[in-house]
Image (cartoon, rainbow, N blue to C red; front, top):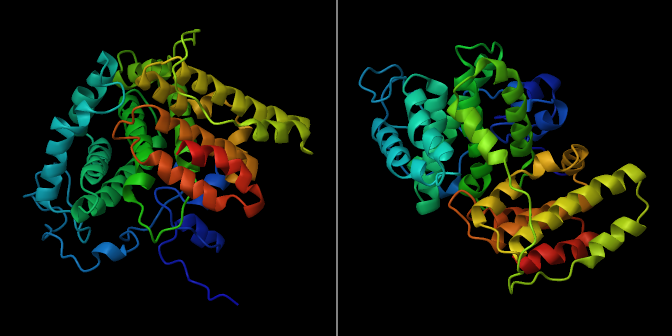
Length: 380
């Protein structure tokens, strides 16, 4: 028998149900599968993240006690987190001067207004937004310097603080907090996109990005609830702009060629799948073909990024459930979406994602399905 490792940092829900938690923050895999809006239900105890071997011997900067009035933040620095006053200032400065200029849609007014103006402005008055902003800045720092121990610890700390406050506010949405909640949702979801490629270590097992996909669905729900409460909202304007993807028109094909990928389509047409399953997989591949066509006709990289990110809302909802069940065909199709990221210019918030996800998915796919991963591995 294999020795059982007791989960000491598992979420409260898994502990209450007496089941093994995978300890993946901000939302564990069990809660993702169990709850429609998992981020509202999955709560972790205020313990530090699991130790990472690469920096167990590093001594962090001295921290200020909780509630210290000398903190540069208007919020208390939590004791025992390893996040110092100087690290906090460094991350805020980095976000304000660098990160905010390199976020999605920063080449358009709606993106500049959100990231460079509204997020810092709201953050001055709201701890949840402030913490999420610093967590994203820490991820950006890590893409520039993967060995920055302080940034790694800070990202864990700040996103946990932001999620805790976000959950509390979700219980009552009104005009006074609608803009804050929508802005925080965008930041938290963005961090979920960054978390695996920025924070993972070689010793940690690969985890499917389904938490990120579910958070995308959560943003859509918050958009619906807050719609009558928000008149002039930078967050809402940004989301509408991001989702407004232009129709695809015919154009001159570029010299780039994709490897042949006929086997997976042949499998869908001949395999013993239900009519509903064939429809789900065919629709997922159909949208995949749309993105391939956009790349072949030379569509702008920024628009291709938006098409890829919009995948969750453009394919049948059941496809996400098939991913959560780790159905090999669903995993192979998802790997194809990530492979397309390598075919266009990668901004910092996508850099490394394709390789991380495709190699992780390849390890999840059963050996007799290795043929289905040949295409994404070839593109990679």
